[in-house]
Length: 480
Image (cartoon, rainbow, N blue to C red; front, top):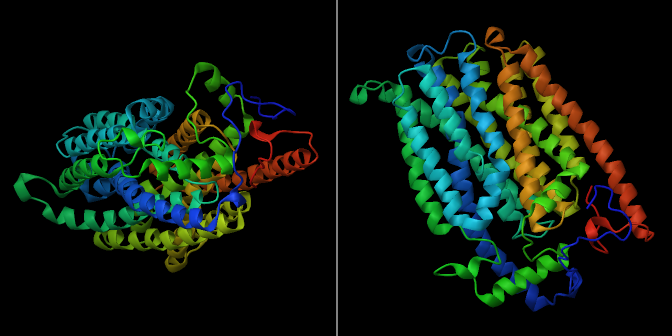
């Protein structure tokens, strides 16, 4: 299907239209659905969120280890060695996104996602025993391979369970657990560096060892508790939902967007999906937010340390901005779902991030600069679930979701590469080039929202007049 959704155009592999409308479900069905979704929430979101949370710590503990003495011990203070270690992660991360989602569907959510977590946990554990900066670079490459599939896999799985206007809240809850972990990861790192000398190991090594062991334990937890896609959950030895409950969820999803049934991923579908220009815009949203997210993940400690705080106070001060962002993101996501808004939310959060970045760069008062980190993290991190929901609301077909979520998160990896190369070691701790690149990404986000909104409004009006069938389904409308 082309990106223009020509009038009357449908998928070659018919996914079917909705047999019911959303308004046709009676009160008893809605109460039952509420109970089912609560069961899914309890089982799915904590398991995915816990592993994603530790993945955020595992991915960014390089910054904590660097501040705690790794740079000196592994000779990473020379030239661009630290930036290289940051950057190489995203090379393999980018390459493995879409292939991982294809494997996920074939192998099953619990087995594949927990395997990925177990594998990267081993990598993190191994990082605690490195003795040369080249060994750390190699581990970062392996870490990218295994972490690559987790976020797009989670986004794909969540989008196959929830309705379009339930999605951003769920993704934000799942994502916010990573912010909580990042916040306490800094505090944990502060505690772990005080293990310096224990077992003859430096404190920064204990950061990797303990966090690697935690990841391995959570991988086992994930294998037990993650539930599979609605059409595959019956294959579990102990299905979490009854066939009737699954059928009701699928009927609701079919009414919401007409793609409850799985359509196999083929080369032809992959090419047609990647030809949709809108998907590349959604991917750019993930890139622009990713630049900011990774900037704060990898360089916040160094920026705060540059304000004149001690190492211990730096670790402690890096926690509150992440904790505050959790409440902000969940509140904004609930509002976005309630108002059926996506683009305006993304633009607002990009503007918030831009203001925060400018405060960090240009204010001389450290208190104001520190406040800028609150705005910057809230805006950039808030656009992660917002951009995922933005795309998920405006595409149909499970194969399209698998490919689209993989593509979108791929661009987040590109954002990480950009971050690693524009936050220059020689410009530490203020990083003017990096800050301005991150700020420019927020401006680009607002401009892209404007472009996409114009298209969505035009397409919806065309559909109302019977001149266009959006996403191959009569009655489907874009969310903007």
